[in-house]
Amino acid sequence: MPRLSAARKILITGLGTGYLPVAPGTWGSAAAAAVFVLVAWGSGRHAACTSGVMIALAVVATGGCVALGRFAEETFGRKDPSQCSLDEWAGQALTYAFLPLGAGWSDLLIVAAAGFVAFRLFDIVKPSPAQRAQHLPAGWGIVLDDLIAAAYANVACQLLLRLWLLR
Image (tube, rainbow, N blue to C red; front, side, top):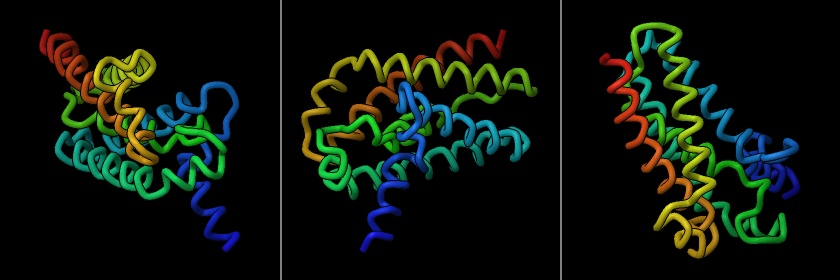
């Protein structure tokens, strides 16, 4: 059983990003942002492929949070523990879904940075109903506020990036 427990910890901590010092949620978001850049660049900035991978990552990370939420709270001794960064992976991945990728490397980096900053901002501010979602039990309370923040971040990025990239 210790191996299963260790595997659960690695998963719920976003492949260990939740153990990194100072703002582990930001590290989890940065890791998901790196996945976005690698997928977008590796697919030749193919928007449908990139969005598909980001949605799949969001679904898998959300499922992991829901399935392992109680385990995370029991292991780390509090509700929505900071070591649990898989929720940031879910939210950051959802933020990147269907964003325009631009024409080149510099556009892609601007999209990645805008999505990262927007998600972190909305995740920290927690506009309604994100703040209330944190009170849900276990895994849903861990991840739903991040998904709501991601929806806000995605809409903001859709507006700003489409205006900027279509200038």
